[in-house]
Image (cartoon, rainbow, N blue to C red; front, side, top):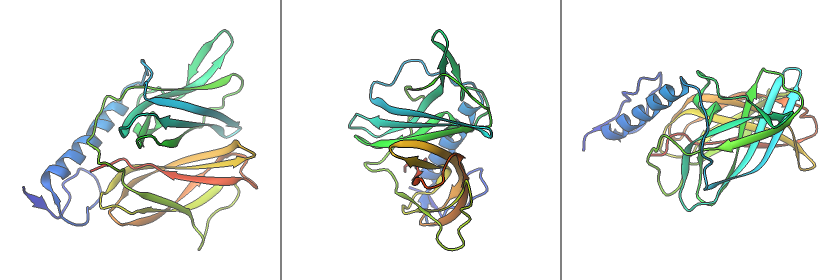
Length: 240
């Protein structure tokens, strides 16, 4: 099996360590496939029978809207690249989608991964102001089926303690890739909660996080974050 110590991915990033050319090619194909999917509108048809949506929170402010979806994988298989549709239901069961437009970032309309018999949280934010109605979320069947290992790569997220930029609704975080698998277009979510209720949320995306690498980022929250407890989440996007 041929190996290479430099990336041939069409991205402004360099892999560390030696990996097979087959792995490099597979990762490049996955990234390219996701870009292609994101160029089209997303419509979730059949609901995924292996996924339960436990809770959907709608947070609306003058600056925009955040939707926080807590979901659970009820199967014994790791699930990846799950299309998700969110929006509001108003009036006579009239549904208005928020994330079905073409040319959104791929992970604004897809859940990157959720481990077997595990739960995760997904966040969508938009500058669009939404008022009234109740939120909905529908998770569908994946079109892409990238190979996964028995366990998902471990990505740690923590608050920045030195030189923190947390001020008002801006939260500084440190993101560490504890695995030997580089990550591309890595979604990072911060959710603020109080008394069992989500009161603010934000999302950002890291274009690249190398193997065993650490970086920092700022996440802007929509909603009321003062005095709330924070949940920090980063979901792996490359699995082998």
